[in-house]
Length: 350
Ligand code: GLY
Image (cartoon, rainbow, N blue to C red; front, side, top):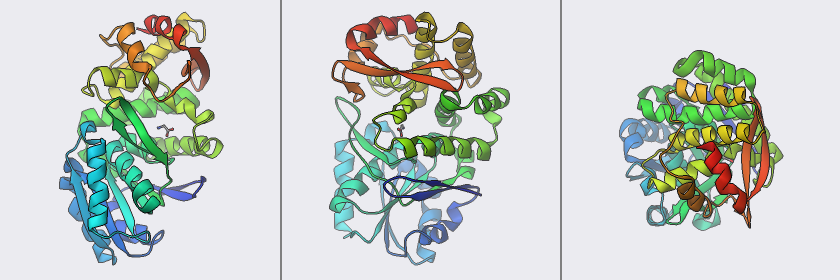
């Protein structure tokens, strides 16, 4: 088991290990004394792990209640968010109680946003059950819901009291969802760590889970320490995301986040070598690792389709979009690009 401390507005541990869920009550009690615990989960995760988590919490003295919504990105909306708030109110949760986000990125983002806003903030813990949520969305306090105009358009920075990553739950994750998370893991290698990149390249899906998850969380810790509120260095974590979100939106979210980010990274890599930002060999290495993980690297959407969707992306700043572009494996730049320059850039990456 490993613990990585995140220093932010509120400091908290990320605990990474195997078979942690059965002891979750005991682990949680070290950061928050027994109280009412509202578990927010989705239908897939709850059916496998709900009873285990609820009974561990109850046996440690928590009074558990649960709100379960249909799994999938389409639930990450204002309707489900309001249902969660009403559930918390109906169960008379108070500011000394606790929200437990049990699930992948959708659950964590939405339960986190409910925690940030219900009673102007109640404590919550993240229990990520997907690889993507373990290495990225559960750490660093970003919470959000989608609006019809785009992804994550309403949200808050609100740090959890702890994050519990039990990577044995990845054994029950469908392979396509596991691959989705690999896209974010590969992203960390491209952004910061050639050694991590090499390990992933050599191992494929059989990578060392404890090493890889811990390393990604350490890298994210460094980013959050430097730029908790996403005004500078943290923007690099958006590698592949500007184009990725445009693909997700065009597909009406039938292309998953991880697949879309993989295509987005491939677009960024191709355009970067065309524009002389990186050498062709770097682009080839990025495409090649994505293909090794059987992640998609092309899309049928046109530069026009992607450009139009990018204009409503929350990362747009006035007439500029900050693109994250690879120079080497382990080093990327933030390049302010005007919206006029954007469409030819996308075209170069397709
Ligand atoms: N998921 C990107 C970030 O936390 O900044």
